[in-house]
Image 1 (cartoon, rainbow, N blue to C red):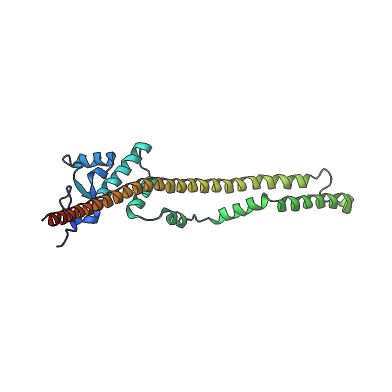
Image 2 (cartoon, one colour):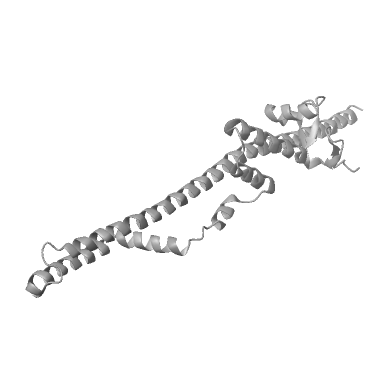
Length: 233
């Protein structure tokens, strides 16, 4: 005797594999409310497929995000799409590496060198050599005699040029940090939503196993009743 391995969904009236059968008793209240908006006659005693349930789960997630955030941005839509397509956000985030322009590369190198001990020591040595050369070596023929007006001019020009270049590098790093924060938010949001869906999938598996065990117990009871009936005869 062959067992029926399919069932008819009470929503779409379509045939689905028995493994995809989900009882209305297993559906969360929020998702059940969404289903009843489209199918008012649906009750907890009826059954739907996991495919149909996932559609309402996605709708529930979108509604949840809209309620929490107010309006779905590109980030939230990207997270919902990743849940639908079942793809990893981490790999997507790692692929989005920002390309630096030539000016940004120069600014980063200047900022890295200007904020290092190498720059401080080398520039300190240069200033000492400049002063010693003009005071002692060149003496009366000094290019920049005391109080070193030319040296002060060079230092002022260097500071005037170095400051905006370093600020350019810092602005780019701040923008990079904002992008990292957005990506971290996307990953954390997806993790939270996937945990919610995982709880529901576990509930579905547990309930499905319980139903199978109950069916097995019913068959065993029927067999025992048949044996008792034969013994009595």
